Length: 221
Image 1: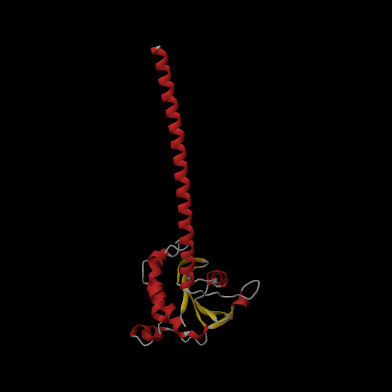
Image 2: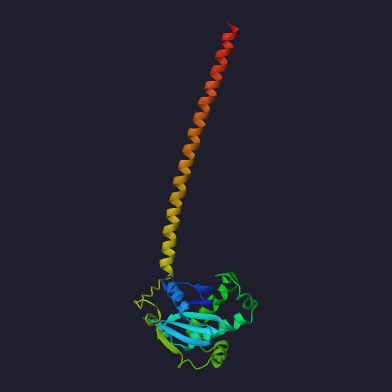
């Protein structure tokens, strides 16, 4: 049980996000963002299978995280309140109105990463920091919960594919091997071309030398 994915967005423009998994949940959140009303500050949860997408809308910005169904609501909303508090108190809040997509990844990506790790760890369940945040979080039992399939236009069943980090690492290794083979192939092709050019150049030089020597021989005669 853990927080799998999180983001901060201005409307449909994602300013920063973070995950250590792979899957189609980023496409799903893109669809969710198109449906979230921004005119009122609110909290809501969208459900797809065994995954919940928890949302806080505050001052025109969307704070969203995806978590396992068994993780409940209290911890994810405590996480969202904390990243919202940190973001609002940072200089990024003023820049958020005109920032480009993913502009804050470098500045705020590690904040999402560290807080996701902290709030996902049961061992930190009773820390002062989380306890304080929990006291500040409103009761989430009344948070509106919607089924994602009812929110999206086509209403088709969505499969959330959460992959393991090892799968991503394996794909990276395969890509690395393919890239290495391609580099070797290109290196040999370049080397062959250089050898051919050197051979042609040598033939031309030899022809010139032989021509000059032939002309000198005729002059001496």
